[in-house]
Image (tube, rainbow, N blue to C red):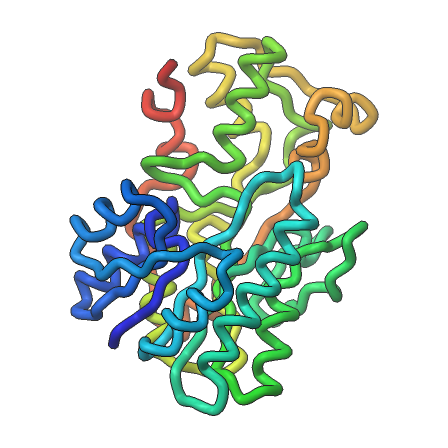
Length: 298
């Protein structure tokens, strides 16, 4: 297949590109910069210039492809609501080029806040997008495309996708520990974070693309839930900082906007995805992977 990949040089997207090429697919990757274009070409992919704000470039890329994998997302959390709306428009533009065809579209979503208080599964449906509660509109946009004849499905990622080049939640915690002088957790720290290595996640994307299902939901979850306290303990040991419990009241002051994620149990299962694909993660788990100099280098 000739696959159009957004976020093709990103943390997850670049792993997806490599996985697709190794499996014999051709990749057309969306890039904004000259540096990104060189990196993508070196990986063996074709370059498609554009960005998420250029909806026509998105439609052109999707129109000349056999399928689309959308991994791009602006993770500037100071503009999270705005970025969720940009994501919705992006998905709509990609879907417009795929209407009434048998070409698949894979949309990226997440399991965080999907089923607070219990382990989420592929059967769970996120709440309707709400700027004040749950602004992410990825899955709602995919559902709307189904009504227009698009073969849209969703790959959900955990709060921690780890590996070389990680710039997500764990690096945020490491930076916060450096700034505050402690590695903190909330309460007894038993709340859990699911996790996956970027290379294991990339395989789920490829298998989902090849499955070409309609309206499916897949969980790229290698570990159902790693206790938050254990993450804090690795950070504290690596930075030679005390590991400290914060009360729920103290958490907001310590973690800021991140406090909600730091305090909530976000465990998630990938049982259905594993059974459907025979997928078994092969890469190191979260604690082993982050206990490495590349996460803590100055």
